[in-house]
Length: 302
Image (cartoon, rainbow, N blue to C red; front, side):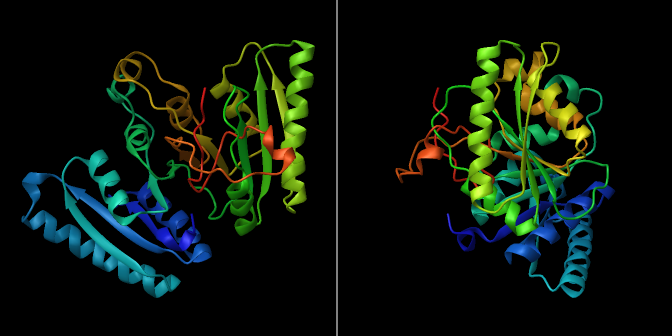
């Protein structure tokens, strides 16, 4: 996908501190890619046409003018009425947005049972979602962790991960995890990680590779521990779509990461079908990356 075909960054805004953090990140991305920023506030249907809507629109206008003046960006404001989670994704689809960038607080109370606010947006999103939590990180991404899933999947391209790192001048930390200490499995996974490292290096990207073997950790726990240890300022993951029963009784990996990790998380939904038949290099044919940050991901398969 040519980035110019989807040059919108959608930022849900509720005028909180974390919404300000999301605007900071969206501004940095917009400057680099030349994107337009869309500020969205979702009101309830009963507030449509009320003084509340007029107040929200005035605040968005003032914020838009400030961003345009301070950063030289193209900024558009939107006020929509409806369910917050559903409306965010409907607007993103209509805009053909490249990203949704949203600031969120940690989960509270009943959300632990019903599924988190960012998780609901991620599950419904057709575009990458950058989740920024209430801990303020510096603008820009320079130390990016990309977890690699060792399940049997269709080969995925990592071209856009390379491109993303180059735009930000970032170092890539490729991370793999095994709960088994089987030597044959370790050797196999190390070889796969090495092949991924080679691809990044061939494209001039500063990359390191780590494999954690720990039977006491789950995938999310291993990823969070590693990301904290290397002081990651961005984690790229492919999200999982969980059923409602799973959402109520247990968190899946994506939700656990969104709930616990402090660093910004860029979540990508898996593609529905393998539409790219372009032949890749031989070293890439057996690589199974866990991320495609610009939505060019093929069908993960089984």
